[in-house]
Amino acid sequence: MRLSILISILLITNIIYGQLSFVDDINIPVENYNQNFKQINAIVAKNYSHLKNKNIDIDSLYSFYQNKISEIANKEDYFKCLLTYFSKLKNSHTTIHLRDYGIKASVKMIENRLFLHKVDDADFVKLGVKKNDEILQIDNRPIIEWLNIQRKFVSASTLDGELNNTLWKVFNSEFKISRTYTIKTTNGLKTIAKKLNIPTEYSYSFPNNITKSNGRKLNETTGYITINSMTGNVVKEFEASFNSLMHLPNLIIDLRENTGGNSIFSEQIARYLISYPTRACVSRKKIKPKKNRYKGKLYVLIGVKTASAGESFAIDLLESGNVKLIGSPTAGDTGNNPKNFTTDYGISFRIPIRKPPQISFNGFPMEGTGLPPHFEINQTVEDFKSDTDTVLEYTLNYIAKIKG
Image (tube, rainbow, N blue to C red):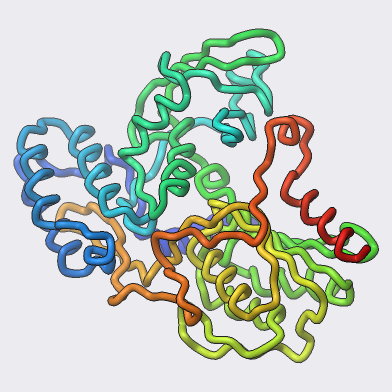
């Protein structure tokens, strides 16, 4: 069973993200760095959708990085240079397909402070490091300073998206490196040196694809369905949850962890939630409501991780006129038809190629601007430490007030 799941995951990864490779496995001689970069830039210049609308001077960008690459004599510096080049394209669908090394832990940033969200690393656990502990420094730099240095290696369409994507680098890297973490625990400060030299497991690389959709009844009037990706069997999983909750007068759809997948799936799910026919912002096809569509009040939770097919789904629901959005702005990047390319030296990457870049039927830019919620609510440190979902609690209180 596990093998079949893993095979499915790898197939999805290769289709959506291209062929992922470790830097160490890519054989490219130093003397060919410039030629390889020239090929990458030529593909970007010819195909990238957003050069004009992002005011990118591709010739100047090429000249700047070509000069830098001419002075590089090792592979790690070369790939760091490529990462910064792709970051200048300002789009999270514009990335090199590199596998990561890392440790089993993840973080969450709240009120400009960085907290451990999951901790499965054996060394951390042995030293008493737990969920909710605060990371104060990395490599002897305050957290904000360290994150600002790392941002230059990250591709994103908005500043909020860039910061969110940078959080991944706290415990992961494209290179085998060591980091030192200063962590405030219940037993005092801990300084821990860790080697990032173990291939990152899938559950930490793409945590949103583990549970795609599940639902439950929160109270006598409100149902709740999370949709954490638009991949695999998400439509059937959604239908199973929806059928048991559709009779309730209020329904909450949680997209805060939905980083996307296939917009065909999101459009199929939308048919259960819209009241009137609408045009899908990605395919431009008419979406017609299902006969057993939801007829109550719909609330959709969004955040900076809501991206790609997850974000276009939120746009379709909003423009159907049948939803309240609650949370924080989305990633501002619905995709614009990303396509995978591979150079002669085996470096795989993807860029959006649809020209011109799309806007929704109601005029919302589907690139570079996060979809704003009707009510902007962010988790507080106090709520995080008490395992209280600030956004969900606000939504339930809002529903209660409306009912009253």
